[in-house]
Length: 430
Length: 130
Image (cartoon, rainbow over all chains, first blue to last red; front, side, top):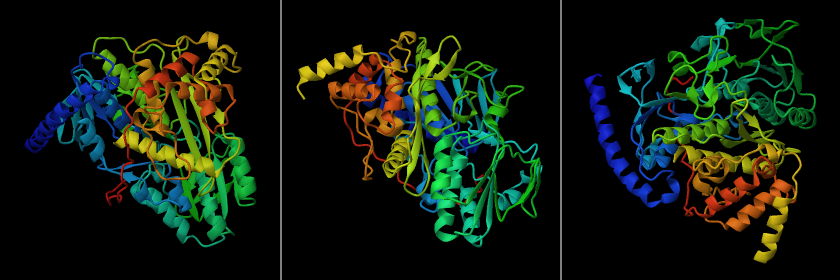
């Protein structure tokens, strides 16, 4: 450990101890928070401060009555929400409306926060090695989100190429870049978007993005066209609802082409070659295929033949490493990779860790919910909502009966979608 | 409504078979962590421990903390039976067992209502973000 890091860490520790004394006292008085009589002990390191990681960190502190020390390792100093970020492309939101700090969640729950990147994980000695130091853990949570696979798209791997053809699939400056390109495009131009095969982050996201770009074009560039090249055989989420929104609200503007995987990409001319045709764009958005994020790769948690992480769905413990848990988009769950899903997995994992660290068995039949809204314009949204229950025979989470989608998008649901965002941000970040 | 009538509706809703859920296949977990963890899953819309953020938008999610357990249970059972109109709640209620609905209603009724805020947005820093 470098001296600088050690000092910073020691200061953090002292603050943390102060905070944890204060928060333990608080939690002891609120019995309904607590699941056990005596607080468990030990240290959990959480790698990743997105929806999943931050939620797990907070709930472990809450449910362990402040007994378990939680250290979050996250390279970024800000949280940028992917949900709602397509609205930046439509023009009704700014990226600065979706960017938050971690101050409140750190302070309110006595989290130790290390702003650093993970370079190695030693699961044998139970250590996380970062650029500026190392941490030992009793249990490790990897909440590493997604990483892009450029094996078949090597021309897009560099920063310069992504400046020209952004993915904008992790909310941030690429989202802003794509919006600026749409603003700079002449009326009558062509926006081309490529969607990878499932599984990828946010199944309805690409189709919502089409709606958002179309809603912008409809008002400001009505002669423009959108070509959607989808590697999938059909719209993979809220199909009927999206198809209807495109044909009624954006008639004649959207040209949807299924089974259209990229075979070749010419960056200079922004031309995509598929098996059947070639398409040239004025503004090009390629969403690359995805796999579990880098920290999960570093810790060797991906399957040999499938680039996601297999877990035990009662605890989210990795099938490849003891005392290492994986949550959020990195998990091979067969379920939609959404923010609500990530937080639901995080809470089941947090609950199981608190139980295990008290020497008890976790809940043998967890149940959780997922709600996901998509905006078809600046005001109207529609949902898909499901409860998922643990199936003891299959040992996976399965969709309970009764789930489903909206009958039609509405402004009322747009309002609920905004409430969803405010509440999930409040739950994750305060 | 008269509490007696509420109880009556409640009992009849539980007893009536609800199509679409194979209730006999589902054994509700009695683990002490089951309900608090399930309840936490509601926080995406209803806030931490049922304390929904007041956003001032046209419609807001209902705060659940400190609400009457009888009221909450009846609402959920009505959503589950499809007798009360909703946007998403019928999808959620139908995935829960009557026992989970009963326990969730009790859990939220026992939470101390508190004011929750959404975090304040800030300017995205000009660092090299992916």
